[in-house]
Image (cartoon, rainbow, N blue to C red; front, side, top):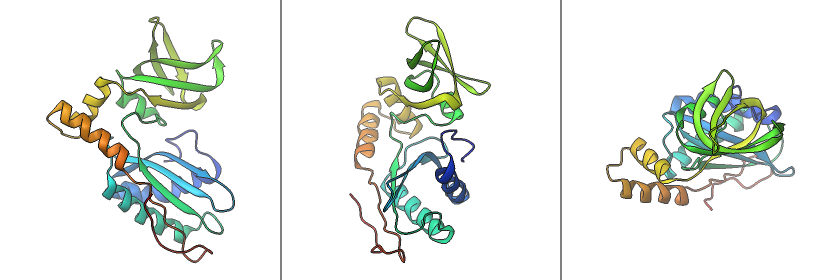
Length: 208
């Protein structure tokens, strides 16, 4: 997993490597992983199903239990830490090369670490990938080839076409009903925050 998300390194890459086999067995994939804070770090995991469809509340609970168990054993962070699990959402970040192929035809906004042809920010329609780069068609019809390792952040733009595609992926017959249900899932998906037992924090799990 760490190899699939170029932005991961150090502790984040190590955690991704530790939890990847378990999530793969359960049918999930990491979309984004971040470790925030120092005294009591928060491990934030954004995930979806292996087929790219959105996860719901029960999925977040399952991921949280599974990941928490793995990290309790592997113990990558000394001291107390918390865990947050959430859905990638419809207008999800694109962190892996395969994301750009999966969502070809949809609108994206991207920002690079270093300027490309004098600019860092790009907006356009995804046309796929080329070697190790994402390719988009800009508003003026020109093509931009963005090396995946230089992309600081990229996120799909919420459009009617994206909502319809997401609804179709989840097997929802009605476009209107699909859009409403997808949006509701994105709003209601909890971030689960279990305290790490035995590390100076109160064990348990809370939803907020």
